[in-house]
Image 1 (cartoon, rainbow, N blue to C red):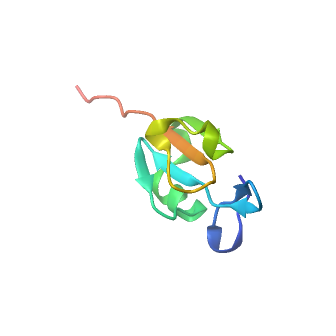
Image 2 (cartoon, helix red, strand yellow):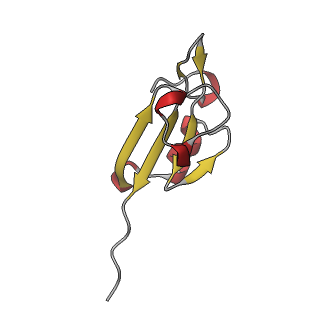
Length: 82
């Protein structure tokens, strides 16, 4: 996941590099940059990550109108306090 200018995220697209749609715990972040992701999620809180490099691979719940793929980040649920 290379970082471009201004923290923009790019991945190879069908014709050229494109900006994937980013989801954190099923919530879509519009025009998310790498800095946005850093603000919302601490590395230790990441439980899993899915990277779909082509729009045809993206599950329906994460589909968008772009021809680029998607990055889906899942975070850990904090433990309940007694």
